[in-house]
Structures are given as structure tokens and as C-alpha cells.
Image 1: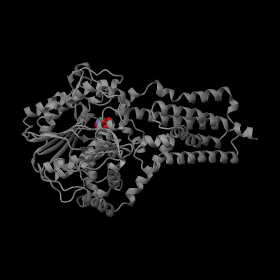
Image 2: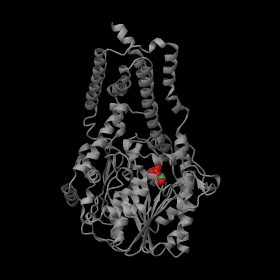
Image 3: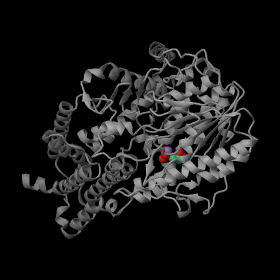
Image 4: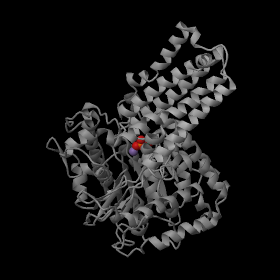
Amino acid sequence: MLQSEFKKLRFVLLAVVLLWVKTYIVYKFVFEMKIENTIQEFILLLSPLSSLLCFIGLALFTKGKWHLYCTIVCSFLLSALLCANVVFYGFFNDFITLPVLFQTNNMGDLGSSILELLTYKTVLLFADLFLLLIIAKRFPAFIPKASLSVKGRMVYFLSASLLFITNLVLAETERPQLLTRSFDRKMLVKNIGLFNYHTYDAILQSRSSAQRALADSNKLVEVENYITNNKKKPQHRLFSIAKGKNVIVISMESVQNFVINNTVNGQVITPFLNDLIKRSYYFNEFYHQTGQGKTSDAEFIMENSLYPLDRGAVFFTHAGNEYVAVPEILKDYGYYSAVFHANAKSFWNRDFMYPSLGYDRYFHSASFSIDAANSVGWGLKDRDMFEQSISYLKSLPQPFYAKFITLTNHFPFHLGQEEQHISAYTSQSSTLNRYFPSVRYTDESLQYFFERLKQEGMYENTIFILYGDHYGISENHNKAMAQYLGKADLTPFDHVQLQRVPLIIHIPGHKGGVISRVSGQIDVKPTILRLLGIEKRRDIHFGEDLFSPAKEQFTILRDGSFITKEYIYTGSVCYDKKGIATDINNCVPYIERAKTELQYSDKLIYGDLLRFFEGNMHKSKENKTQLYEKKL
Ligand code: GP9
Ligand code: MN
């Protein structure tokens, strides 16, 4: 009896074991899960099993050829999910979340980057399916003619649930509050398994959709109270210094701070920026705070002074929200606003998000003439983008707020021979090697843009804000990066330090200076507004004016890590500024605050709370639709 029941189960079990082994190999060699003790190793091994048993176990309700189809389809879907995560991980060093899955209109444009990551190894991820098919063909007896008895199925699914509970208990002992503090996806995957993680993510998604429906204006007051109680009143340094001037903001793709004033093979990497810095305010302790939305998150943080979300890109998930972004505020002060970015207009859902941010005009790939000769990597070369933008810029009503988003220095950092003006680095990471000539290319394009603006007489009356959007070199290249920085290896402390990106505020005629105070992208909105002499009676921002001596040195990264004047907190460890792990009590006062602040910002976005903001209340939906129809 038992034997005949087992025979009805063995094809499913075989599929489960194959997928289990495969997932474990991926954990170890692709996701490089770090293990500190035997319990963790055991959890890692155990974690995929319960979900695999449950999903592939669906085939136990079928018999004959349907049993075969069902097993293969379930295994295929789970393998495809694994494969998608492998590719995604290679690119973003992170796991897929549901909102990211819906960003498929980004996928076409990701072309070259995805191809770079799709290797024979990714194909190998489907090898077990072929094995299953061969077994089914050669040993037809493996496919049961009758389905498993009801009792048999009950025992099967009960055992799977028991396994899941054991896994959860062990994980919770090893990592308390694992599920409630869902900052760190790697930790989640490591402890509950990739497939359970995706189920958990789906639950989070449905919960966040409910939040908007339940939100009311009292929640907005709660957030405002938090801000009033925790943020310092800015002092008046440089207030109104650039009143009425044009503003040009430049997003420098993947430019990290370590390249500034630095060399590779004895060659200066960013000669133009190094020179510009001498006549600008340069913030060398400035951190990017982006999450999965990368460039778009940086744009979102800078213009709203809100945090991005911990899952997905807010540009995609909440483009229909009400915001009080810089372009919209500036409109009330007579400014015209425009964005220049030579990518497809729908990338990061920009064509829907920009109207919500209050932009008047969006110059995207269709606005530029792009051909094989002036393209590289992701599209139009930066220098050509700047060159072709000049006439558009000249035609804008003044004063304007114009944002330029560079693109050439994007992973995988390929350039043509003629654009490489310094030699590549030599290390085991070809990505890091190519990064340096690629950054130099951005530097030269910026130099060209500034020269042109001067020639066109558009320099003097403009202030410039240049910032690195996010890291370019992910943790996957830590070994090579350590070699470049002359370190034995990179610690989590070093990793946080590497999240620094340059922020340069250039005001023609101002001497500027280096400002070494801890800050982040969240601080840019209030800074721009105050430089332009705009003080709103009521506004919501989590950042503080960078020029205010009262500004607190406390910057929170999206994964809950933070930096203060004296400490860096990451991965539950408190480091001093020399990178030495210190007493956690030094960080304790900030840990709760960092968590609360991120939660308030999330609440504001998930609940679309700014729709209750007095300035937004009167805006009719019609207005917004008209903006969309205007097709920026
Ligand atoms: C795409 C560009 C690059 O339009 O902003 O996006 P990223 O991958 O860096 O977020
Ligand atoms: Mn980017």
C-alpha cells in the first residue's frame, strides 16, 4: 500500500529534489550567501524545500499525462523565477519584487545589459527539466496512472507545512523580527527561501494597495508633526542668493564619489569636475539614498525630499499620486520646467510621472536625432545629447528649471575606441576596468556642455546642481574594488562609504568650498528652494537645507543603514568613522528614528497622503488628465 502510494509521488519528488539542488547551488555560487554558523547553513539548505513541495505538489491532484504536464509546468515556472532572479541579481545585486516585475516596459531598453548577463549558465538553470522529460519518456512507469489518495495528499501537504513552520521558527531565532523589518531582501531570501520570499512579497503588495483606500488626512498631520518635531529650523546662509536665476540640474549616471580627485594608472579620472569643484560648493560626504528605482529614485528623492520605496520604483508604483515637487513649486514663482533625457520616454514610467511632478516639457529619445554613429551602449552619447539640447534650451521661457539626465556611463560601461581617453584599469572585473574611461567620458561631455553654455551666454545667469545618481560598481565587484582602493577586502563599512556620490553646487561668481558634512539626496529640494529664496509656509520634506549650519548630520539609506557625524550603522553593526565595530549603544538613539522616518515617508506614498495637502486639494483630476494628454 505504502509502496504503491510512493510510486504516485516519486516523479513529483524527483522534480522537487532537482529544483532544490539547483536552487541551493544558485544560493551558494550566484547569490554568494554568506554563512556565519551551522544553523544558518542548515536554514539555507532547508528554506527552498517547503515551497517547492507545495507548488510542484499541485501535480499530485492529477494523473497520467496531466501529471507529467503539471509537474513540468510548475518546475518550469519556478525555474524561470529563479533564472529571472539570477539575471536581475547580476544587474542590481538585489532580488525581484512584484512592482519591479510590472516594469516590463523598461526591459526592452535594458537589452545590452541583459544580454551581458545571459550566459550558458543561465541556460543550465533549465537542465533538470530536460532530465525530467527524458525520464518520463524512457521510464513511462514513473508517471502514475492514478492520482494520490486524499489521505496521502493530506500527509504530504501537512509535512510541507511542518517543514515551513520549522524553517520559520529557526529563521526567527537566528534573525529576530525578520519579517517585520523587511529592509534586507538578501536576509529574507537566505532565511525563508527564494520562493517563500516571493509569496511574502505578494502579501506586502496587496497590503500596500489597501493602505491608500484606508488613508485619511489625519495621517498627513501625523507625518507633519514628526517633521516639525525632528527637523531643525534652517538658518539663513545663502538664502535667496540665486533668486530668479535659471537652474540646471545634471544627473551624472553611475558616478560615485571615489573617482573625484583620483587617478587610475596615473591618469586623472575627472579633470573637468576636479576643476569645477574649485569654484563650487562640493559636498564630499553626500550619499545616494536610492532603492530599486535607481536613477528614477534619485530624481524622486531630490525633487520631493521623500524617501524612495523599499520595493519597486515609486515612479512606477505611485505615478498617479499627488506630490509637491520642485518643478511644481517653481511654477508658482514663474519658472518653466523641462527634462532632457535621450532614452525612451516610458523608461521608468517617466512620461506618467513627470506630469505628477509638475514638469512642463520632456525631451526624450524622440526629440533627438539618434543614429548608429552618435550612439553607444544605452543610446545617444552624452556629448551629443548636450549638443542637441542647446537649441531646445535656448527656446525655453526663462527663468527655467532644466534637468539633464546623462546615460553613457551606464553598466556595462562599453565605449567606442574614439571615446576612450584614458586606459582601462587592470583587475579581474572587466566592469570596474571599463568604468574609469567611461566616467572620463561623462566628465568630458560635461566640460563640453559648460563651454557651450558660456558661448551661448547662458552660463552667468544660471545655477548648476550636479549629482551622482547611485553607485555604478556593485558589491559583485568587491574584490577588484578592494584592489583599486588598496585594501585587503571590503567590509560592510566600506560598502556604505562607497555609496557616496558627488554633489556639486556651482553658482557662477561664487568661490564655493568643500563641505564635509554628512548629507544625502533628500536634502537637495529644500536647498534649491532656499537658494532661490523660496520659503513655503507649509511644505513637507524629510531633508534639510545643506547650507544651514543647523542641519543635522544624519543620513538614512533606503536599507535602514545610516551615517551620523561619528558613526555608521549597517547590517546591525555600529562602526566608528575608522570602520571599527563599536558598542551598539552609540547607534541605538538613531536606529529607531531611522526606521520611523522611513516608515513615515512610506506611509505618505502608500496612502497618497499629499492629496490631502491644502495646495493639492483644489486640483481637479481633469487637470491631471489634460497634462497626460499633452504628452510631454
Ligand atoms: C534610463 C536611465 C538609466 O533612462 O535613467 O537607468 P538606471 O538603470 O541607472 O536606473
Ligand atoms: Mn542611473
